[in-house]
Length: 132
Image 1 (cartoon, rainbow, N blue to C red):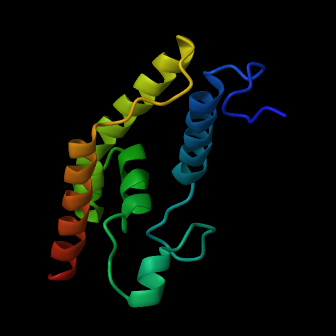
Image 2: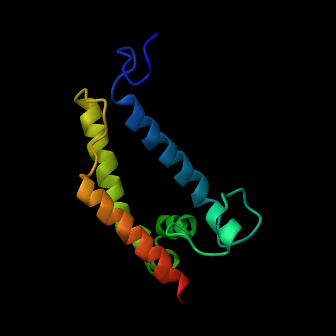
């Protein structure tokens, strides 16, 4: 039995389209659900729940909500790093979608140095935002 990763029956574009569809569905739900107000069915950061500290992604849901509503200054306050990273993530998804349309099954990934730099940036951001 062939795995899903190598199955010729599933088009290469299926994975990036699925991620795109999930992102759109999440954005539609989030648009009508204000994460600044309590009582909504939204994920809780497990790192913050366990430690009380902010992880590099904390505030990302509020940031996305504010971007969807055109409040960029508020989004910057919620999570500046994720706000700056968003266009790069969208470009990476677009690149993966383009590769899938051309028949490539593997998503294009940043090089090892870029991945290490991003990890270092995220760790630094996580430390600095907890020093306030």
